[in-house]
Amino acid sequence: MIRRLWVQLALAFALVTTLSIMATALLANTQARADFRAFLAQSQVQQFNLIPRLAEYYATHRRWDGVETVFADIRGMGPRGIGPGGPGMMRGPLELILADASGQVVYSNVSGSGSTARLNRGDMQRAMPVIVDDATVGYLVARMQRETALSIAAQRFLDQLNQTLIQAGMIAGALGLILGIVIARGLTAPLDRLAHAARRLASGDLTQRAPVAGPVEVASAAEAFNTMAASLEAAEQARRRLLADIAHELRTPLSVIQGNLRALLDDVFPLEKDEIATIYDETLLLSRLVADLRELTLAEAGQLHLNRSAVDVTAIVAQSATLFTAQAVEKQITLQTECDPDLPPALADADRVAQALNNLLSNALRYTPAGGTVRIVATCARRSVCPAPDADMICIRVIDTGPGIAPDDLPHVFDRFWRADRGRARAQGGTGLGLAIARQLVLAHGGVMGVESEPGKGACFWFTLPVAREPVTSQPLDASYSW
Ligand code: ADP
Image 1 (cartoon, rainbow, N blue to C red):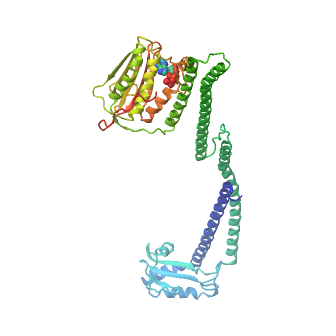
Image 2 (cartoon, rainbow, N blue to C red):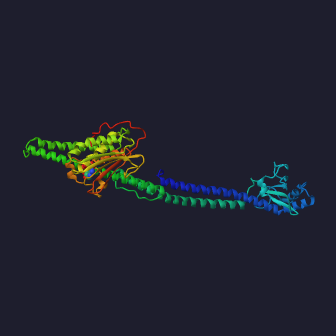
């Protein structure tokens, strides 16, 4: 119980309040005693007309020598005089010190203080001036001895004061405790709710959110928790969607293989090479799908090893164009390359750049009809019309004259397994992962990939790569990387 935050806070409140009241009581008590002594000392001085007598003495003698006689006269006034057992509320001797106008002590009945001493600053402030002919000629300090016992009346007054202060302390302590409980509960209740929500989240309820309430710090912790819970929920949904997509993508080739094998076994299809080739094609698609998935997972987790160096982008473009020339000729498509003559080297992994570029080229050739054109354009980003212009970037664009992509579809082209025409794309051997992989590869290089398209007028896929500061150090080795 004592380890609970609200209990500790409430107790701390009560303790601080009680200690403050106790300190105030102690100070008030000490001050009241001192004030009593000062008051009584002054009233005794007045009672014996000490100041006028001293003034009269000075007016007569014009100096303080022999002033002891004035004090002796007063002492000689019998039992009502100044001294032990004297009158008033205080019993005990009255200390008297007389100093001249400069503060030099000329008379003192205090044992231990000689006539050579001077009044200190505190005594000067408390001293009563002796004035003759409008001029201060001396100072009289009157005080009761510190150990002087208070009279019964004064003692009763102080006891009363103490009692009142103790009662005030108890009331303030109790109020402090109540206030402490209220404030501490207000502080810890949202924390309790946050802990409760965190436990529910840990037990698997990702929809759990904490109420944003309480002091700013606690509310901001709750907000941070809610943001974390929301991203966990989104990640979990994405994971489920991915699993469902993978299951769906695997099911199609598997059921084709299964159906064809069943038909062969049941002699519905003749056991001929053509039939086996269909099944083989489906297994190829399956293994591509698995390879693509692995590649994408690695790229998304940032675990792709990039062998980065200064590479010649023109050479990569040329090699990719060569690789696809046969396919372009076969499909009667014109394949062109345009590279800036003074294109700086890019800081990149040549094989991975070729892989991304080949992917875009493969798509462009796949979707462009006979008689169309596919252009690969490599420029410095600041001079090109690249939609992400940046002085330190190289922009590579693959522009085709195919059917283009509908505006509604544009935001999805880089999503995993997304295809505008699912059946057609799969029939052409597409896994729906090519663009997602290419984009991850470019992102891993610190570049960006995007697309612009007007339906019926073709598509322009582009990506950027950072410029290398040093000269070209490596050439693309393996432009035939899978795409
Ligand atoms: P796939 O393996 O199916 O081609 P991609 O991720 O490479 O998967 O492409 C996703 C989809 O984007 C394709 O199915 C197609 O609908 C569309 N697409 C990609 N490139 C082009 C292009 N050049 N022209 C028109 N549509 C394209």
